[in-house]
Amino acid sequence: MKGKFRIFRDELSSKDLWAIAILLIILLDSYFYTPTLDIENDMFYIFLKTFYTDHHVVYIIFLGIFILCTSLLVYFIIKVIYIQCYKNYYYVDEMYDKYIDFLQNSREVYIFGGDLDFLLTNKKQFELIKKLKNHCKILCNGSDSWQDNNQLYEVFKELESAGVQIRGYGPKISKKIIGFRGQIKIDDKGSLRSLFVKRVDGSNNFNIVDLDNQYVLELLYNDFNECFSKGEDVFIKHILFDLGGVFFDGDFSKDFLNYINELLKVKIKSDRIDKLLLDRDLNLGKCTIVDWVEKKILRRLNANEALNIEKRWSEIWYPNKDMVALVIKLSKRFNVTVVSNLDKQNGDMYLEKGYLQYFSEPLFLSYQFQILKPKETFWEVICKELKARPGEILLIDDHEQNIVSAKKFGFKTIKYSNESEQVNNLLRKLDKMHIVVLEEESISVKEGINVA
Image (tube, rainbow, N blue to C red):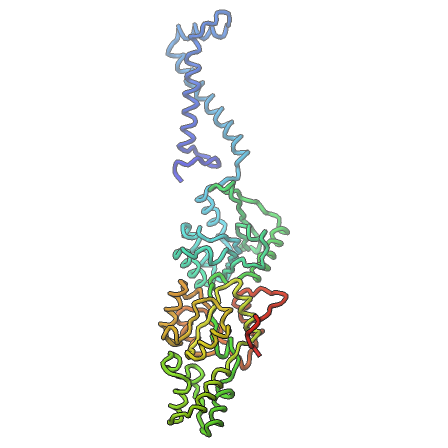
């Protein structure tokens, strides 16, 4: 940058010249008045005084040359001393240049990052990293960095779209590693190179840590990859669980339809759509399960039949205790809530019994919000209520239509099948998506909740 004092540059900057000028003034002032001193017995001063009187102009010329040479000598002695003390200090913009040079001729790059905000101003470095695609891995602070910074969020998303692999440090990574700042690369010759920096006393100056030992670099390279494998997704902050078939166990056809058919001596068949949305009005809270059955059998139910059906309807779904334990674990690091097409009768009952007490509010229940999955407007409402971007939300659901719609909107998704997959399989899918689930010795379900 023009006008900055660069001790490591060979050319003189404006501050170099100012420093020399000040020294010149000081020395000129002292030497100019030397001949006026009244020192009768000092031969050197007598000579100077006589020479000044007899050859005034020549004296001034020689004095100027002498002062200039002396000033330059003093200045450069001071500068050499300063360089020895601070020879490895760099300003921010100079570090940008260093990193740009470092990225040249790179086969693979591994970045120990912070919040990556330097990529907002260093566009050239940003483009070089994007070009590396999946040959670049970044460990960084994650979503807390760009929570209120849309520009930085877009940087993360653009890198991800380009194929750059990004992980957050997460709870399983050593705090010593988190403090690292710098890059390791494999150059075009297959050798490891590094550029690590350390901020100097909280200033905008940086010190470069030289690491040329290949053995040490290999250790750091291996440590990086081990930490990267333990890193977490940098985007996801909210996890949404569907209820029926995911958080709840139960079988609509086996536990409810078969019971109705036997009770009423009818043959109501389960359509595929029933599993996604039993009835629009029912799931919007505009009718009851008794209304739905009467519509199916084309007659009114008597009081006893209606009572038995309502009782049976309230019993077919119940929390899976392994899912309860998983939600408790995830809630320690994420905002975990539900999104479900649900009727008012069961919804109010689940809330009263405490089935949903492990989830954070708001609970996205269709009868409360008057919207049904897989409507895009439901996803919009969720983003607005959570004050979140679509890419920060993970949906776990058992219906393909919901998964497709949510994914198209920008949610990250996991399709869960309760028939073929247990919670352990879901854990493997979460791990594959780099969602870190902290292990604990034991997790107990709160008393008063029947999960049998």
